[in-house]
Length: 639
Image (tube, rainbow, N blue to C red; front, side, top):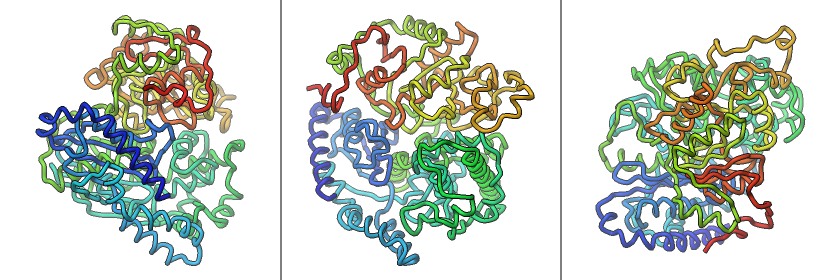
């Protein structure tokens, strides 16, 4: 493995030198700016983030460039893209900041193994060589990967990075901060307060007690993949009944009134080896784990609903305790558990805090951004500029964008046929197509940072269509039919459709659909269980209304997403509906598209009807036959 990272480092050096040829000539610009590069990698969701003079200049996950979902390797392409956009070289960096402390994490692994030995020997032996050869020497690895970087290197604690990613971009001068995930070095949960440029973490819960790992245990037991299938468990939960909630609280989790908790480790396997659960867990819930891709049964749905309710209760108790202890009226959240938009929505609707702000890239990818911001504000003592009522996340449009010349250069070798339209004409035309129930791939502006498509790399559809959810899931996304789609709604008209407690610009809050839009269920429909509920329309927006009458809402405003807002407004003018289906522009098993070529390939391999890339419109029936041979990236490599 050491050789592979040396190879990665040399590739990165070559890539950076190639992309920065023009940047070096901009020395006068670079000399005036102070820049910090944040990195997260080698676990999952590698990313790079660049903070220049205190502003977020760039952030992107490596997977968007390599097309390897959850790519954990060194983010060489993301680094190169960020430096190129900022017109900087590695020599211009004030510091490179890594999002956790490798030695502290290795200490936890050693202590954990010694505590459970001889169990876990195989997983320990499997991990040890990688740590001894590479991860413990992260500083040198970073220097080599960045082409001989010789500047300052900083290592943040994992939950410091999460906390910084939540508080510093928020619109609050001061706020409580809560971080929850699987595990960092030792911590799995922390809370504290942020004031101005300072963050102080006050309380923590340590490994192996983890709400993130509890949820992942049920993810694995219900037959989904850990670190990517948690969304599926959340989406499956409304089909079930909370039959196991009390059993989980009685046997697995000791949840206190202040939200603190301990897990009964007799039921888990992750601290002893590579399995999340053990035979005692399986006996408690009546049998072995579901095999991946096996038929989903009512049992999996009930388990999903039950563990979701436990997370909901825990987050609500934590929130109430933190509000009381901190006295803060606002709360910032990050960490993988903060992506649980159902629990977030409950916390919001209960009005425990006046406002929530959740880092859109709440998982490990966001740690890169948090690490850079933590160094800039907390370690270097740089003042923080707060804009009341407006965050500094820039709608999370923090990745690369593409000019028309680049788009044409990428797509000409494919034989792509397109029509270029002025912006107003394009908006009107796409709104017309959506009203005809066409499915549109929408690629515009800078790429989103985080797991959600927010109108930059999205697949769009008409939410009024009762057929749209099934069609998009099975013919375009190639994913499980039960998974709901999210709505994008004009911020100024969101109250017509949803019972919002606050704005939701990053699609991280679930709210009920307005009762006036509900469709009453017949007595026969009310007797349906499980997946049979799927095809019963719940509202006059059936494609985005989940079986519990909820929706994962994105509110869109013209200031942060002008072109996307204009499209939804044009659709509303034509149809009276201020909502579009918005799902990520990808298919199952692949990352969200990053480049125009990625978008065209996804368009041609699915039943998407129309592709829009900036001012260009591509109609499926006009395109040449798609022939994919070998590695499509090599097939269309451009000099």
